[in-house]
Image (cartoon, rainbow, N blue to C red; front, side, top):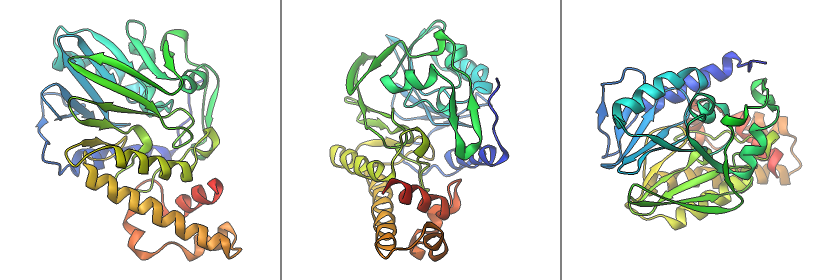
Length: 303
């Protein structure tokens, strides 16, 4: 069965991809127009971000070959392969890391997984190996074929030594989903957040698949404490930022959750909370795919 994607979800993907390619203001930005399908941004000498529809893809290239974090939508798998070929020339794609199971981050597993090792958290393999659904989007899909499943999985943390760097993969439980991985590049001082960061907008929390807004905010706090002012922060969706950007995102999460908790303590229903709304200072965060009412519902369901 082919996955069904409604118009709202398509608008979400397009709005996020536009945000990613038009709002880049970080000092490391350096676009390469050689590929018309994917916008390319140099992060370091060996790391390149590819962005279009779907989550931000990070490419590591060097003597060991190629490694990518996430791989976008299935219908862009050919375009991704072209971009990797242009950037890596004769390099072999050795590893794919899935930050979580959602189809806008794992769509090219099928096309690329036959000759590449896929790495993810244990729960990502479990999710992809069975029928899946995201009720908010009216999305459902059959199990992935064997070659499109992660063959290397881990329960809490693992290290990948590749292209002269140490990639620390860590699971932050029940945040965006129940299988989120954040990747820290020790030498490059880069962190790929997966969908533990939508920037600058309210995040999607997949309540149906183990996500929880309260844990999401807690884990953002842990990551914020861990990085430094020179860390390059790559969100799952949105422009490249830094620790200050993550702090801004954290501040929004903490304060909006506190506001919903206060409303709930007064005995207000979800409908009443949504009608009252959040403080005006958070209005701009609701201009992405997830509006204020939906974000309030995620928080209320997580309490």
